[in-house]
Length: 230
Image 1 (tube, rainbow, N blue to C red):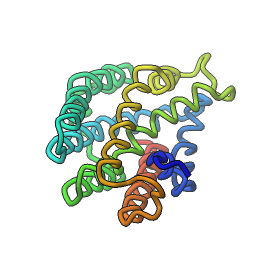
Image 2: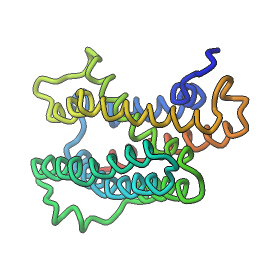
Image 3: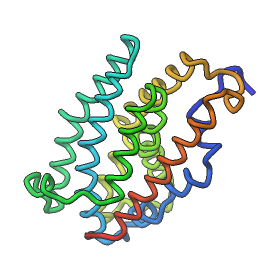
Image 4: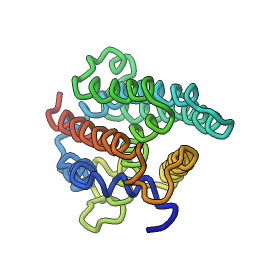
């Protein structure tokens, strides 16, 4: 094994079933084929708006948990990007599906949404920056992987697919580049906390693996919630 194996890749390998269940979920497969019921997608979009608000708070917590300037800057940049760019894009996208921001802010939060976002916040509050980044990584890095897979999969239908924009957004260079910065931060923070060599022998590894796997299962629950529709 390399002296510096990828923390992200090792986490995925340690949670293969949950990871594959998340990125290959029926919601994702139906979306790729253009067969996802529109009511399900609208329900998902509305809940994703609420999720983004909590996701922004989690990254704000990452600022508080950061101990060096580079992490402070990167975490603060993530908050700025989410609140002042991505959230606005999401609102505009939702409007194309008949969902106004005035309606989005009044939506009741689904249990799956509440469970996931509070887990991430609790992880950040009770742990350190590494714990928080691991809990965030299935979202920040998983959507990028889903986007790459769908963009490269010949079974993905783009022509006439109502969800083509979603696929191209997460598979596009801008989102991929942002995810790569998140991956680099995860790796850097892990190294600074002594995760080198055989990661599975590190005393922190069992807890980090559990955090990652739990977040993957909660992502599965989020897709399940989407399939239930409004």
